[in-house]
Each structure stands twice: as C-alpha cells, then as structure tokens.
Picture 1 (cartoon, helix red, strand yellow):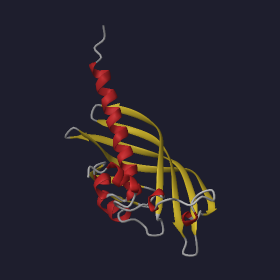
Picture 2 (cartoon, helix red, strand yellow; picture 1 turned 135 degrees about the horizontal axis):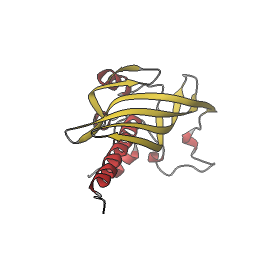
Picture 3 (tube, helix red, strand yellow; picture 1 turned 180 degrees about the vertical axis):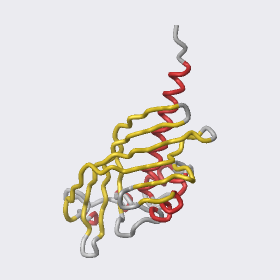
Picture 4 (cartoon, helix red, strand yellow; picture 1 turned 90 degrees about the vertical axis):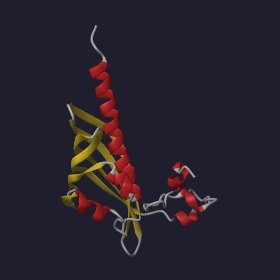
Length: 179
C-alpha cells in the first residue's frame, strides 16, 4: 500500500497556495496593506505590465491606490500549480473589474488575464516571490451605473450594499470583524 503522507502534504500545500492568492486579491480590492503583505515576500518582484518593481515599490503604488479607480473586484478562476519541494509555480486565471473615474464620468471596465506566480515556502508559510500578469482581453462597458439610483429601478435600503476599494471601507470588513 502506498504511503498517502506525501500526497496529503501536497494537497495541504496547494490549498495554502490558493489561500495566499485569494488573500492577495481580497487585500488589493480593499487596498489593505496587511492582507497584501501576508501574501508577498519582502524581496518579491511584481510585473503588472503597467507597473514593474519591488514589493516595497508595489505596496506604495497599490496602497492607498489610484483615486481614479474607486472600485476594483478581482474574481479568481482555476489555479494550475506545480510543486517542487518548498517552491511552486502557479498560473491563476483572473477577471478583474475596475470602475474608472475619468473626471467627467465613471466607466466600467473588465480585464481577463492570468497571474504567473512563483511562490516559496518560508518559515512554513507560502509567499509570492515573483508575479507576472498576462493580459488576455479587455472590455470597456461604458458609463458605470449610478448606485444612488439603486438597482433595476429599486432603491437600496442602506448605504452598505455597494463595494468600496478602501481599507475598512467595504461592508464585508465589518461582516468578518470579530467585534
């Protein structure tokens, strides 16, 4: 009978890698430095096509974020993971929504692409040491909906229903808080 221990360890590693990538997307959507920092190694290199630099430069760029992008939402798809002891190469599909404030109006845009991540297990924790974003498609959906009007002609009953890309600004932050 085969020893299941190595296979179980691989399942745990892959789960922790996906959790790292999910935590990063959540952190970026909220511009939450703590969540982002928990996913990147201090010596990481990030190449987003429109930005290339060190982790320290990246955190300054993404937090507090560009005011012309008041809302972002990253939906992650499947991750293909190749493990090599305490290193991993991962391709994760991403569809990202960006509300863009052009100064005259807000526009809804959507990007489809893939993250290519190199991760290392450091002190028992999987961290991204290198990230490259590949762009597969882009769509500009035009003028964004005015949320003050509610949705489908029905007004919202409270202010917390629309997403916000700001630290502790999204209702889900309160939802998950321990207080």
